[in-house]
Image 1: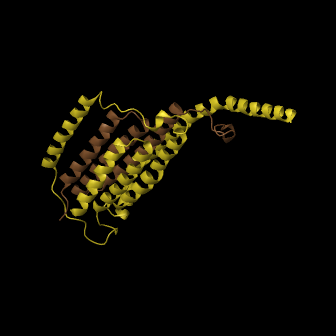
Image 2 (image 1 turned 120 degrees about the vertical axis):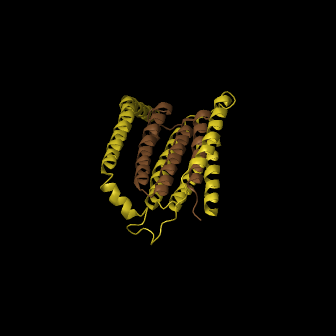
Amino acid sequence: MVAFWMLATILIVSAVWTVVAAKPVYSVVALLLNFAALAVVYLTLSAEFLAVIQIIVYSGAILVLFVFVIALLSSGVAPFATGPNRLPKIWMPAAAVVLAALGFLISAIAHAPPATAPASGPVGSQGVFGSIADFGKALFTVQLLPFEVTALVLMVAVIGVITLGGEQMREAGPRAQAATDRRMREAILREGKG
Amino acid sequence: MPVPTGHYVALAAVIFFIGVLGVIVRRNPLIMLMSIELMLNAGNLLLVAFARAWLQNAGQIFAFIVITVAAAEAAIGLAIIVTTFRPARFVDVDDVRSLHG
């Protein structure tokens, strides 16, 4: 119980920090803290495999992608580093969202199912709820169709990214060629002067 | 003493609405995308908490699939952001002249 309250505090503080941070880099750091704390919460819910996947996929892949994009963009676009804040303009919808959240919170706590006892038996062994053995077995037998659909989703994502990046490359092709030509002309001029 | 499922539901709701507020208030595309990640994580927390409550690991498998979808969404979203906001059309270290004397 104490662990839950500590983790909940870390999760909420880091989530707020992600949203209010002035620069995207600080948001990424806060989000990293959030994902790490969430991985520990998954462990307390005996979802061992998900805790590992959370660290590998979210902290390892997605956040690194964010850092790359920040490094790529913030060098050239000055206002991109901070961006405007629209809170003064839209405080009414924001207040409505907060009220809806409070209502949802109260009804959720009132209607939630009771707590279940923690898993018994050695951690991770077959037959204990949440063990990696059971997870893998279910993933490749009962839940095989969703797993295969996941492959399709990733395929669509890859094709989408290539389509988006490919347009840019086609556009950049002749311009990159022109830049090379210009550099060569300048080099020849310099040689002529010297 | 096990933690009641309602506590996890409340925690997920708080994180989800922090993410909603982030998308509504912030206009920086990267921070908006990160807020969407927060919302997806709140949904995942709910799936895992209810999987624990009913002792069915289908919820965990669905959370795993949501993580995959989140990875695909981040890749596509960041690609869109890069194509929209990229200042220079190509990256070539030989073309960098800012420090040229």
